[in-house]
Length: 306
Image 1 (cartoon, one colour):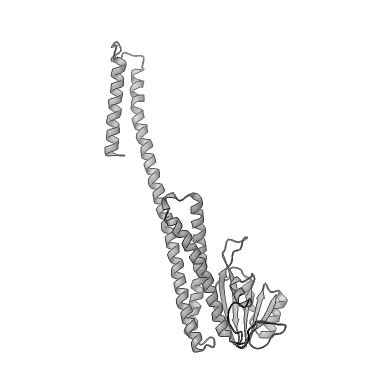
Image 2 (spheres, rainbow, N blue to C red):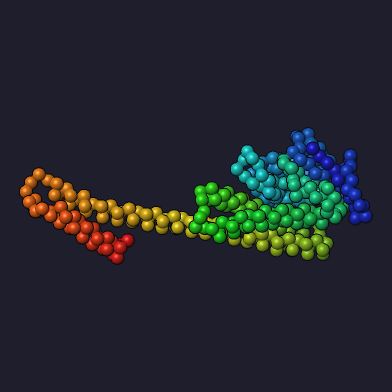
């Protein structure tokens, strides 16, 4: 599906056009081969590059062909059938148009389509940077929620259960996916600041520099949360190992202590001549020997080993 949006600085409402014109924003969701061919023929974009958007695992990158700049990015998107938490989007900046193409719905663009953001499609560079700013905000909200959940687990590291560990592993996967999406995007943002790849006014350059700082902070924040998760898992493993060692030592000590009466009782239970056989107090003497031996063993184990 292809939708043409148009809005100038003086317009109050976003207009949906039936035909394209200069200064239009073209948004396409899950385009067919015919729709892609239409975009190629009308706007003169590279068909080989836009075909890459069909690869769900496409990595963020920046390319320039002719007068158009192609920006691949990834946005948070929960896919039930795939073990991945982001989806690709292609943003194309041309001389008189801006195109966004994605195979799935793009939630971070909804505020623009619903009129909740102030923008102009005729200022395509500014709109492009606003898209990146909204994408950054989406990741920021996601990281804030993850940080809260991880902080809660950190406060009860001694009582973490198996399902909590599974949730931490899930968060770890999400964070790795986020970092894999943000780092390449941050790299082509740096590239934009060093060359004249797109037309920018002074306010656009200021916004681009602010975005670069914000994306760096996002990456650092994601890495920090990831490190916290790794520390929680490491601390939990150490606690479990320590508890296991204590249990093993206790059981080993009990085994040694209980071996003493078993051994002495076995010796005095043999059908041979044994001490105290004819002594009327033989049983109590043996019992005292067993008790003293067990007490000595317990004392030794508590002070020398356990």
